[in-house]
Image (cartoon, rainbow, N blue to C red; front, side):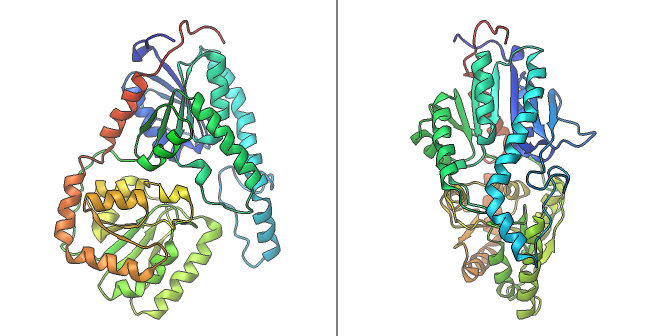
Length: 419
């Protein structure tokens, strides 16, 4: 390895099993690198016709297998709920690990042809793996081409919540393989200091924290003098402690604050959550929850936050990944200029408490959530001022500089020969 060539001559191949068009981190990082002079190409999945990637970024779309139910759904679509069919629900729970493995294997097989087509135009200087499910493929390409390997850990993969039947053998095997590839990677990126510390302890040589923050944008509508709503904006699904938000609705109504839940729903979860929310609404007059299962553009979410006046960042704390996470909705609320009530989990609590952005509550405790909201309402002007002070520190422009600075120090093979 020798000193890096100028950024303008460097090619980056990014691999992502996520639906690229809706993955803000993948696109934001690609745009930052392209702006810095890199030639970036993403191989992802589920890119709709007519999608326009950021300037200077190329995108290839790989389909995704329907797994155990071929032809039953469009690639990337949510599964139909199995409500009222306990046998089918049990079968899905039992077979989910195999389904997930088949889906990921199908992506790797389909991506191979796209990778070869890309390599035909020349080798990359950097291969950027978004999450563990692309890391093995990325490491193989990096080894073949002598490119630098970047592992972008969007979450603590080995510490994720178990969804479906537990599969400890597969999880241990994946964790061992991740450890080996962590040690191989020239650079590891992740989203929080807590996850960075874990990855360093497991063998990563160099880790940089690139948070899921947002570009600065001034609010176009005024904040209320007193909050009237408490907004959760994100995926509506299990593991996010949304049941606690529904349970707190009657107590929140007593202080004039109505919970609002807005975002794309997991179809199999939505019916359950509607029922829970309606039940809580009947128990307290006016305590119903405003449920909006829709996907909104980011700028529109800003205005939902500002109209209500308060944001809530919920997680149930059931796994290490939740305890160490810094969800993008925290930084979205900061950009919108609204105070935050967040789950009392290590990384979330550290940011909210140190910067006096709002208050924390105990996950699963509706009374704790209601008390936290009441406390922020009482000192609302001070909390708004604290968020305004923090906005400059927690914005994407700073995190983009961390990303490009870390990239600038990557080694490059010389010569960058034929594949």
